[in-house]
Image (tube, rainbow, N blue to C red; front, side):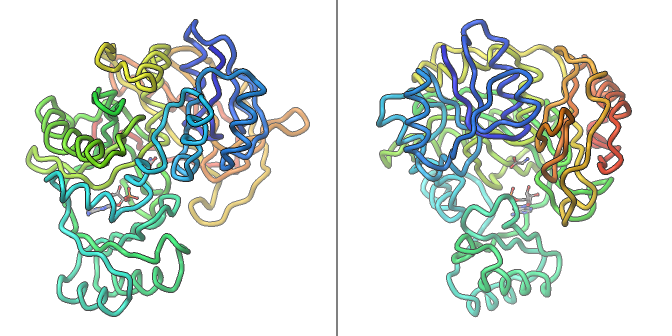
Length: 420
Ligand code: AMP
Ligand code: GLY
């Protein structure tokens, strides 16, 4: 198979690393890719938000299977354009990607299917939103309806914070994404990420993970795209997993199919679990980043077979083979992230790090310049390891971190602390 992966982050490096191990993969191109991906696959400069450009590229390169990494091209309908042109695609239609692209759409699906989620109200104007928040009191959660690169959610612990968030959103802090605002009940509990492969009919759990969203040790400080993750998530016991499938995932998928927009791809449910009861925080329509990297580390080559089966609506005959293992990833970020940071600093020491089925440094924001690896983003490296215990995986990951020579970078030293 000639395979094209769209995207350029650590998630796509993880996907590429797993796909490459499968003998069914003859050629792998990742567009646009990054310096780490370029070590294991061909990278191509391509505007992945343009359906026409991606279709043209896939035709020229005799691509058999396209895997879409990020949500933006999915929401923009790039998957639809590819399918119309006859390509096999892993990832939902633009209509089904609304599960991530619109928070109020997801709330409608929850209402229609009875899936447990936070109580909410929607607003298109500031004054009624402010009145509602004043009546509800804090803590309360303010969300921009649309895609805001993970930044459109404010968990307000005080009324002042909530009112300020409402003003910011209606003042355009998140552009069009904030034209509608969803205000939600604050959910208490432990969070987990649940990944379910879907082919429009069948739902096949692919794994669980927990990530660390806050930048500081002990889960403090500003929110980020994720500073580390581990899999499996201990809070996702068999009973909780079954409840999440029966009460949240399957009813949502059935409602999507009933509307004529069945979901195919990976459904990433962000769950809040309290007293054994999962509630839906949000859906994403792609793998989590950095959660994907720990899932890939645990699953390896079978990933290609699973994604292929989902795209071909053959999940009823597919199996996920889990080892009794654990994986953990530590995100190394540029100093200053998630605020402003410098680009272009040189990262050394990567050549001395083992790359095998237990140790892997996935690249998130890097490029190669004059033969050296330089940082080009906020989250830059995902130092990922596998072990028979979570402690062993953590030890391996931090041993790799110690060998990376990058004074302009930092990482949290406590990834996995809740489970350890
Ligand atoms: P999201 O961008 O929707 O993943 O939200 C970012 C983070 O905000 C989530 O991972 C949760 O930690 C938090 N969050 C979102 N909604 C709620 C809620 N209703 N109650 C408590 N925390 C929430
Ligand atoms: N790590 C969270 C996300 O990918 O949305």
